[in-house]
Every structure is written in structure tokens, then in C-alpha cells.
Length: 136
Image: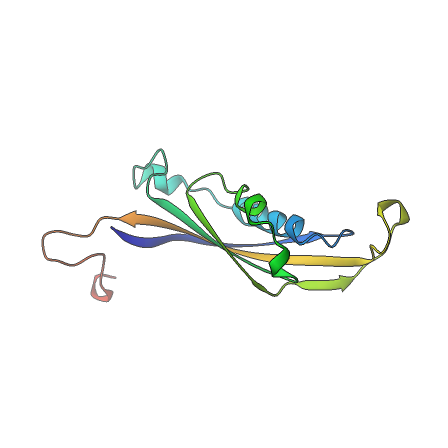
């Protein structure tokens, strides 16, 4: 089977008062998948159970080593999922609201890039797999 990209989606998420990088990463994943409908997997590729679907998630955020991968990947409803974290995102000056806790004046932002891959069988007749540039 050859793995082919089906869709790439981007999202962003923030934690306004807690500097919680996992919360921001989960929100970034939800933002990305909230604009995507994978109906083509069911209607065109005939995969009602999302067979052969894998999802790669890259999270760019401050403190990537603090991201709870189990919580972030739990946001994805289908597929075999992998998470990669990298340094990025942003910390911006916010406003501390005392009832939200102490030292809460920073806003933390995370970005997500989500790529959905589908296992595609290769063509048997001529040894080629997929379309060439001449087919487009």
C-alpha cells in the first residue's frame, strides 16, 4: 500500500490565563478539524469505517516538551494518529484576572498542522502507482 495525502488542515489555539500548552494544543487541533469534513473517504474511497487512515499532527508551541500527547491525540476521532511537537507558537502579554489565579497575565498560543493520509493500493497492470504529471 502507498500512503497518499488526503487533506492538510491548519488551526490555532490559545490559553488566555493559565499558560497551559496542552490546552492550547488541544484547541488548535479542534480548530483545524472543525473546518474539515472527510466525506470523500466514505463517498469516493468507500471507507465507511475509515480503514487505512492515518493522521500526522504537528504542534508548534512554546515549551513543546510539556505537551500531553495523549490528551492532544484524543481530540482526533478517527485514524491511527502520530504527534510531533516543535518549538513555535507565541506568548503575548495579556491581562491577569486575580480570580483566575496568580501570575496569569500571559497568553499562550499553539499552532497545529494536521495531515490525513490514506493507504492506496498501487496499480497492478503497468507497475505504476498513482498519476504522473502527464495525467494532470
